[in-house]
Image (cartoon, rainbow, N blue to C red; front, side):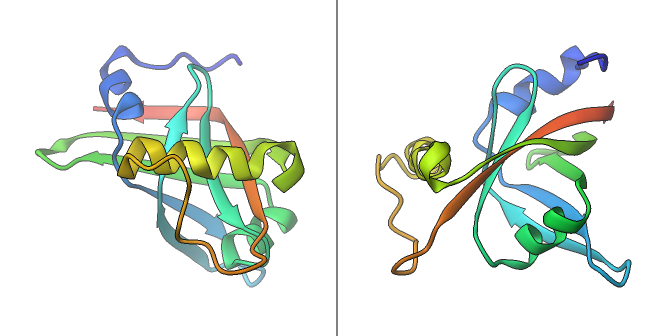
Length: 133
């Protein structure tokens, strides 16, 4: 990774805040979704189910922007422009990751929001540019 993570972004990256993820639809229209995330010290990681719109978009175009806003201060934010560097399927850790996010956000070690037979995918987002305030 060649992009420096600003020190002013650390608290937001490490907090259990909901972020917005922007992907690009096949027709070029941006598509925005609010999701849970975590930060591994170098990358933002998000999770979704196979077949959802953001998964379909990321299959066609790995470019993504993640925006994290401090709910107490609208002038404190991180805009993480990047690309998907790694995709982990259900068997490669996608299910484990959503369970870890459930523990982080809800305090429960098993994610209970899934639909029957839903297959989870984890996306590791490498930064190309970070803007933080």
